[in-house]
Length: 437
Image 1 (cartoon, rainbow, N blue to C red):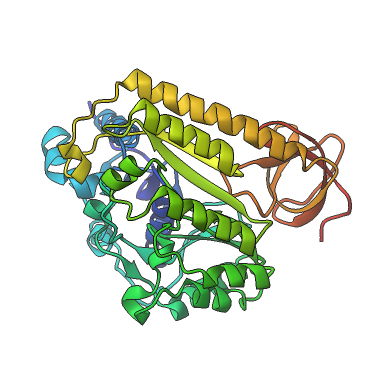
Image 2: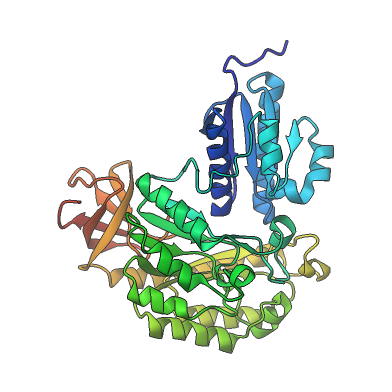
C-alpha cells in the first residue's frame, strides 16, 4: 500500500546541465524561500522540482533518467509530487507528458510564475537579485542575458531559450551588490552569448560598460567572462580587462571548429583566417590572458582533411584551456537536414585525439608555472587537499591548485598567495607563501 512521506512540503530542487540552469534554480529557490517555503537543493524533500537540460543527447538522457528515478520514488511513496522544468521540458513537453505521465506537471524555461503557483508560492517581481546560491560561498554566476539570436546550425538553444534578451546594467549591479553582501568575491558572467550583450537595450554591444560598472561593487574582487561568441566581439572589453585588476585575464570563447567548410556549414559567420586573427588580437592586447574554448568533432561532412586542419590549428594556437565534444544530431536544427555521416567510433576517436594534444599543451604550460606565485581563491577542502584556483581557472572545467592539508592550512573562501611547486597536465600543486587575509 502506498504511504505518504513523513516530511511535509519540503521542496527539493534538482539541477541538471549548465551554469545557466544553476542560476535559474537559484532564482526559483529564492522565490520559494521568500514565500515562506522550506526549500533545499539536491537533498531529501517530499516535493521534487527537476530543472532539466535538453542540449545534447547525453544531457537529455541524464534528464530523462532523473525524471524516471523520481517518478519511481513517487510510486514507492518516498516523494509526493514531481514537477519538471527547464530546457528538456521546454523542447519536448508534449512527448514527455505522453511518455512519462506520472509527473505532476511540466513547465518550460519561461514558466517560473506558473511553476511557483503550482508550488503554492507567489512570484515576487521586486526580488531582483534575490537568490539562494548553491555554489561555494566565494563565487556565484551572474546571468547577464537570456536566449540567443545566432543561427548556428547544430544548436537547439534558441528553440529552448528564445531570442536574446539583455538584463539592464542597473539590475545586474544591484544583484552583484547583494551577492557581495553575502560574501561572494567572484562573479562569473554567463549568457548564451556575452558578445551580443546590450544590443537589444542600448543599440550597441555594451559588455565593456557593464564591466566598468560591476568593478565598482565593493567586495567583488574577480569578474570572469564565460561564453563569448567570436563574430562581432566588442574589442573594448579587452581594454577594460587590461585596465581593471578585478576583471580576470580569462575568456571562454567557444569556437567549435576551424576548417572553413565546416565553419560555413555550421553557419558561424567567420573563417579560419578571421578567427585566428581575433585570437592573436586577444593575446596582443592582453598577453597574460588564458583563453578557453570548446570544439565539436564529427559534424556532418567532417572529412579527414577538415580534422587534420583542426588538429594542426589546436597545436598552433596553444589554448590554455580546451574542451571537446562529439557532434549530437539534434532535431529541428538546421544541421538535422544533413546526413549524420561520421560514425560514432570515429567521433570518439577524434575527440580523444584532440584532448591528447591538449593534454600535452596543458602539461607544458603548467610546467612553466612551477616556481611562480599566484593569487588563488580557495574553493573547498577535498580529501587531503585544499582546492583553489588562479584567476586563469574557472570552477569545474579548468585546472585546480591543490594544497596539502596535512602540511598547510588555508582559509576556504579567501584569497591566498600560493607558490607552485609541482604540476601535472591538468592540476597544479602549491603551498601558501603567506597567511590568507
